[in-house]
Amino acid sequence: MVLEEEVTDEALMLELTNGNEQAFSQLFTRWKAPLISYFYRSTNDYHRSEDMALIVASRVYAARNSYKVVSKFSTWLFRIAQNLLRDEYRKAKKKKEEVFHPELHYEIPVQTNAHSLSDMEEWLAHAIAELKPQERSLVLLVYQQDFTPSEAAEVLNIKPNHARVLLHKARSYLSEKFKNHEQG
Image (cartoon, one colour):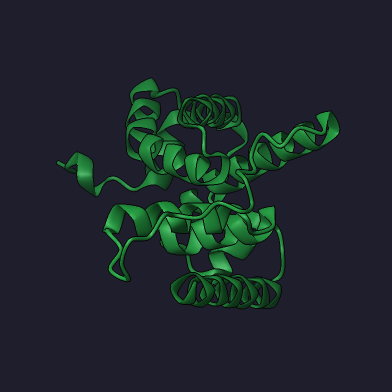
C-alpha cells in the first residue's frame, strides 16, 4: 500500500484525469499555501492572493483532461500561476492603477544598526516589490519556492540563460539597495 506522502503530484494529477476527485483535494492541500505565498509576495494583498490561488485551482481542475507529464507538476502549476499574475498586471496597467506597487520610497525607521528580523523581512518584501514583474517572479520562484533557475525559466517561458541574467540583475539590485539602506 502506498502512503499518501509517497504519492507524487504528477501521479495525483493523473488520478484526477481518471476521475479521482480526492486526488484534486490532495493536490490543492499541498499547493494552496505555496501559491498564496507566491501571490502575496507579488501582490502584497493576502485576500487577493487567496482568491488567485483558488483561480489557479479552478484552472488546474479545468485542465485536468489535457494534462500530460512533460515536466514537473510544480513547473506546470506555477506556469498557470504566472500567467494569472501576468493577466493581473496587465489589467492593473490598463486601469493605470498601482495595485501591486507599494510606495517606492518606503523606509523602515531605524534606531540602531541592529534590525529586528521582522523589520528586515518587511524591508526585503518592499525591495522585492520594486523589482520588475518578471524579475520579481523569478526571485520568488527561486528563493521562496526553491525552483532552480532553469525550472523558473520554464514557468516564465523564457530561456534559462535569460533567467540567470535576470536573477543576477535582481540580486545585484537588492544587494546595492541593502548596502544603501545600511549606510543610510
